[in-house]
Image (cartoon, rainbow, N blue to C red; front, top):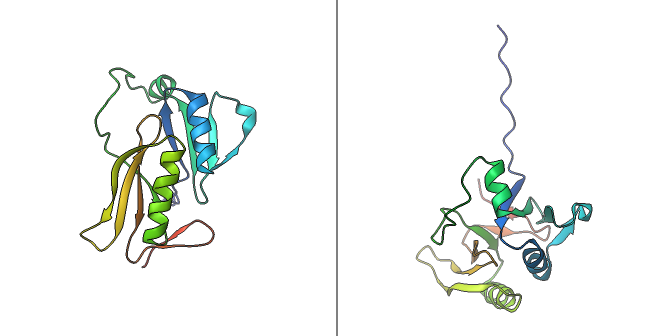
Length: 150
């Protein structure tokens, strides 16, 4: 009996369920993420993040695709966050201010963390939480990818 090789682990796309495709597309474009595959119109939207992709999909359709109920809509923490890693404290402040100017809500002002970093949170139009952070030992390259120590 031959043993099948293990699949190569990879994280490629995070899909966010959104209430208003038009508003969410405009928000992510305003943040500066490059939209790809525009031929999909507002059925689904894909944004290049440098190493992965953010996809936006109507909330109810995404729930249906995952065979989960789309109601009631949670207004509480959903158990996940997105992160925008930065190279400096100043960049964290700049990104938070910029996100707010694009229509984000401030969830938590930037502050020094107990692990020696600096972070704050904003919410996108559907309140998906984004941490904006500079963390010791985590480098952000010019290629927009995060480089972690071994």
